[in-house]
Amino acid sequence: METTLKNVNIFTDKGFVRGDVSFCGIFSDGVFETPDMFDNAFVFPGFTDVHVHLREPGFSYKETIRTGTMAAARGGYTTVCAMPNLNPVPDSLENLKVQTDLIARDAVIGVIPYGAITKGERGEKFADMDAISPYVVAFSDDGRGVQSDYMMEKAMEKAASLGKIIAAHCEDERYLNGICLSSGFAAKHGYKGITGESEWRQIERDVRLAEKTGCAYHVCHISARESIELIRDAKKSGVNITCETAPHYLLLDDEHILPYGRFKMNPPIRGKEDRQTLIEGLTDGTIDIIATDHAPHSSEEKSRPLEKCLNGVVGLETAFATVYTGLVKTGIITLEKLIGLLHTNPKNRFGAGATFSTGKNANFTVFNLDREYVIDPAEFLSMGKSSPFEGEKVCGRCLLTVYNGKIVWKDGSLKI
Image (cartoon, rainbow, N blue to C red; front, top):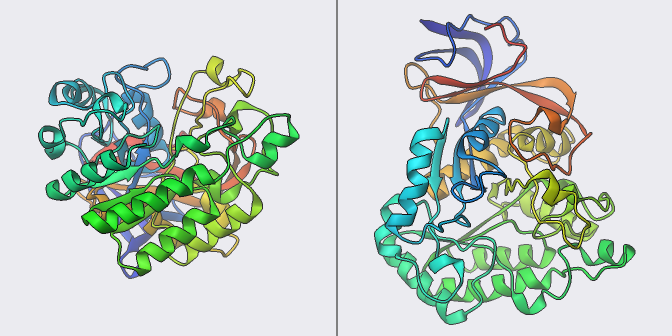
């Protein structure tokens, strides 16, 4: 059976055009009847998130591949890249197969794993990068920085020879002398926080090594103003470098946060000047990608006192709406720019993500940009419920996500 969405706004390389979108395929639960509520519908290619934690194998009490990919589909994503801090760590073919078998069985959208840089992400011995390279999107020791200059240089040389990206969690442990909160916020609540130097010092080193080795280098979840300055200068110098940030770093600063676990992540939300510099980096092209760093934990782990609370928040189900409301509706960036940050740029840089298509193998997502609602974690499909945007009023509701011709998310208001 073919379904047609009539007179919708369709994203193309030349901007938005009005037209019809038809698709057909094997649907998840019965026959899909054409809805009558697409008056202000916008059809986008499915988004790609290059930085998510699906927690499986090893930590399925936090999230599973199935619940994480269902949450992604609800947020308009059709491809996610899964970080390697798992158990077992995907540092060999044997360990990687544990993860890929679960993906094949349970994922409702495309999932591409990362491979670890070092064995067990311990920074001591190299992972079997040659063996796992054909099956991973890039290499990363996400969750901690590679502390040894020698290890990072050799990893970059190997990645360059394999045609793979090094995606770095930049955190120099010499500067980790507090808990993962901005220095300003931490001081107000009697703690010692983490300065941006822990982040930018390692970026400074890695830029030098990337220039020396010719490695394709990507910086994860930047949060500090100095990081933007370093990456901007590196791009001008011709270094093969890209970077990402997350919605919470663009939309919040340490004057917005409260002493609750839903505001604690690594790196931390920083000050006003940092946030403003990140926005400038977004508008001038220094920042290439918006990723969520979706990092679910159990409610018990996130309800502990701040010094014992685990780092990480969820974001797959709120990313588009929060950035659309905070940056597009306010005129800071265009809608076309946002789709580039969520789809085109990650797809081009990592080779990950589905091209917009219709018919039997359709891949796209549909949003109603006028739909206003309050973010309620109780509605999340993710097992993680900690969001710094809880209670925020936003615009932009995902109505439908189709992956490889199959409806993987439909809003409850649609007629099915």
